Every structure is written in structure tokens, then in C-alpha cells.
Image (tube, rainbow, N blue to C red; front, side):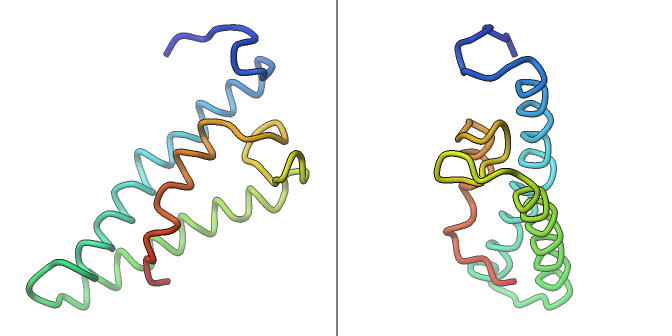
Length: 103
């Protein structure tokens, strides 16, 4: 991904943090939340072991993100993941929260 200095209004260390914080979305949040939703709502056969596995992973990933957020300053209507203001990392990681995944 190209870095355009000043375009996002974050300094270099914040831009690095933005890139690092999007990794959990593609490697953890997206797959685990998606599988949890699938097994909870759409899979024809109820598989308690699959539902339990993905529900626990959703709780784990959510806990990691909430712990990180609890350590951030309030900022502008925050707390936000990086730099005390909304970023694309917040948008990407917030996407699954309204889906009503059981925890």
C-alpha cells in the first residue's frame, strides 16, 4: 500500500499502527465473525462444536480490540484505534459489530 505523507493526517508511527491494526481484520475478525454468523444463522445442520469454536474466537478477537480501545485517549468522539481520531482501521474493524453475532 502506498503511503502518502499528510494525506490521512497521521504521522509516520500512526500510519504504521494503522497498517498493523488492519491485520487482525483480515486474519481474525473477518473470517471468525463470518463463520460464526454462517453457523449461527444459515448452516442447515446445527453443529454445536463449530458454533462454540467460532463464538469463542469472536469473543477473543473482540476482547483484544476492546482492550486496545480502552487504552486509547478519548480523542474526537472516540476512543479510536489510532491517533485519537477516526481512521480507515476503525471503519474496517467496526463493520461486523452491528451484525448481532452472539457472544
